[in-house]
Length: 425
Image (cartoon, rainbow, N blue to C red; front, side, top):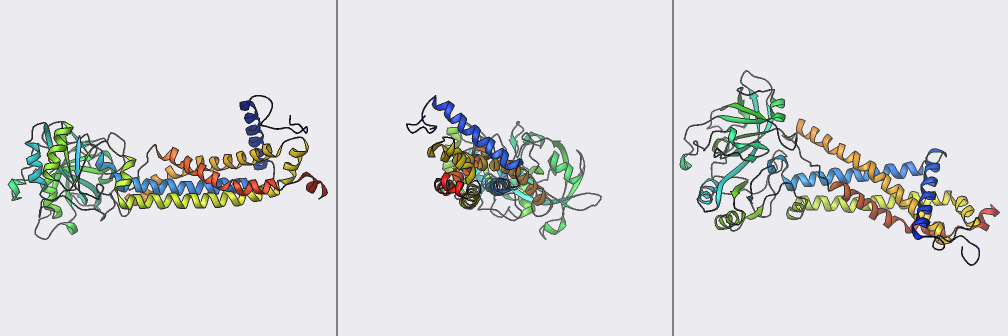
């Protein structure tokens, strides 16, 4: 008890017990306002925060997709080489960064170094495929690699399902024999309605004039370890280079290296001193800081999310306190100190914001799957946004910061509430 007889949450009893009581009062107050009154301000606040956080999660997921490269980065390689100032290829059709030149020759040189088990250029191209007996062409993300017969993983698929080597390259002449093999992911097989041993042809509209429409045979249908829904298929590198026109300059999106990490990084630096050489550990949120477009997208979503959340929470919380002045006056009359009453308002505001954030995270994850489904059915061959566990604490942190930014306004309104004024109304 305070000296003047008021109840003070900061005095008497343990600090934990006092705060437990204040939080309990805040929760009960919110619950009654939500389900036992006609006021819709709590519901409106939760809904606005949820929609804002959902948008933040979706946009950040797209940024992760831009920076991480999606299913293409699902590999067990120890080191990767990518062009400087670019992430790996986006799965969005027609959106790609700089590429590595002379990749076939330089990868062969890297393979000859001590401590390097294997090195393969990787070319990624969205290609329309159709069954040999006709049907509507469907877009699949083809990943060109040079297999060596060992069990390795690129794009979530095993490279040893392809014949070792890359005979069509023929020392740069690209006139060697074609293997015509294709390893399909389950998502790709479902999209193409294909099975192992089925023959598929490349859509004629995207085949260069000087290249006859090739056919490929599905040698295997494999599941992707992380259950990614991107329709991916592995082919021999030189065959995809010749199909896409990347044989002019031996272009590739990246080079993957297996072996001792130090030896692999040293060999990569020797062959590509101006490229980015990094140990490969899958989708890393820190990749956002190395990709200009992805970082700008996520930063814009962060700033807009906090601005919208904070402004809406401040406005509705202030209106709620104004509407609830009589309750605050009753608390003052029964002995709650000004500090305790303001604590209840602050806790109520933060709880409302966090409740909206939890709902927004669920909506955002669902939104990412919806975006991928729409993109896959229209402009992209697969997933353009990624779901990562870090999105959950990130979204909660944004909501918490927004709530803290919004709190001063409802506190100012609550501080002006007087029991004498309310009794006189």
